[in-house]
Length: 120
Image 1 (cartoon, rainbow, N blue to C red):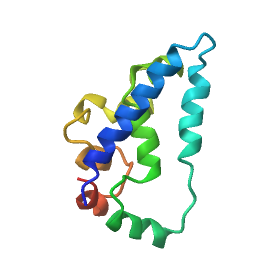
Image 2: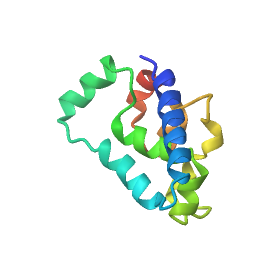
Image 3: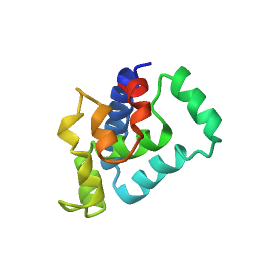
Image 4: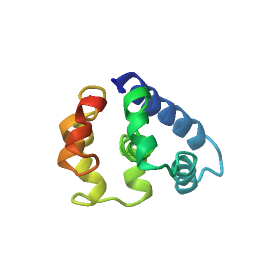
């Protein structure tokens, strides 16, 4: 099952919400990103995770949080992420709106190789 349309929707939705937040006089981007991560927090049994990978049009929540947030420049400046930090290993330009997960996530250890076919 491909997650590309939902990945694009997640990235676009976060960017729209981010731009709206930045218009507020008391915008706090640290709280914005922490809230984004909090809403996707999930604890599931491995069996359910496997099932979701086969039937859900969405990427796993951990990927939805980490990869989507890494697609915004403000994330890097808000958390003072520097070249060589773990977040920069995602190499955003490789998946902006093209090859969104695949071998990149396997290389970075975000997902096991056995799941590649389900997310690409």
